[in-house]
Length: 353
Image (cartoon, rainbow, N blue to C red; front, side, top):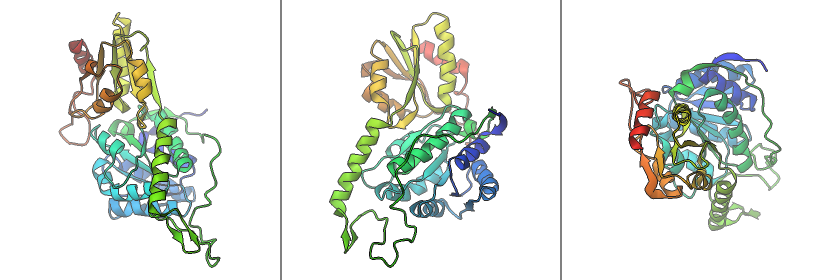
């Protein structure tokens, strides 16, 4: 394994190419801009296409079109830009068109956006929130696999630390197993045969090959996302067995919380740590088991309290749940503020005990 010193956006770009991504479109918004710049340089070298679109709406629809033709495609922005993409993301989910959306957010205030969405219809987006760059390399490749496996748009939730930090990382193609053939792709091979394909939310099919109709199609979509919820939840935890306190966190903040909890544990505190790796599907059953003995379930996230709703739903005793995070944004508005600091996290945890 060869390590290379890479900025997070460069590592994610290399991982996307290793996963077979050959089309990327986006509009520059910090801290996502770095990923677009990396893809604009590297993707043509790999035989792909990268387009700096004139808006986020154009970018996501270009990715949707490339994905409908069978290509592994991706787009992205920060949360503000992804807000503009929500209609197309919903359409892709409902017409079963797989692509990856990189949300290199400016903070952790996009949890609701990632897990609840802002489009129409009954859909969700599988969302992975890596805690560091090596995990982002793995998650990038895994997301392309999950998108094709479930025929759905998926989200990588990152942040400025993930985008702009440099670490030594190895980017190698990962094999997650076989995938179904893309026999639905609009590749032109059915033209003139009377069996041409279409990708359309209403899924009625052609007159000679009628589909299930809107009711049947949307029922099938709902059943699919219910299956995904059962199958794809992922989490990480440490020292939760018998712990009186469990601290729940996600993304880059979880890396800091993990460090603080390890220090407190070494000092004799009965404390453990739990991280949802998938923000959706939320690993509710695992959290319920992890908090079975906890008198305190503390939620640290850098927003006004969003993931805390899911923690309250799934914790063994919702009365034990307390929010210890908060809004914390740098003066520039483009990065985290002072709450993402190990001594401050430690202080908040200890005060809550």
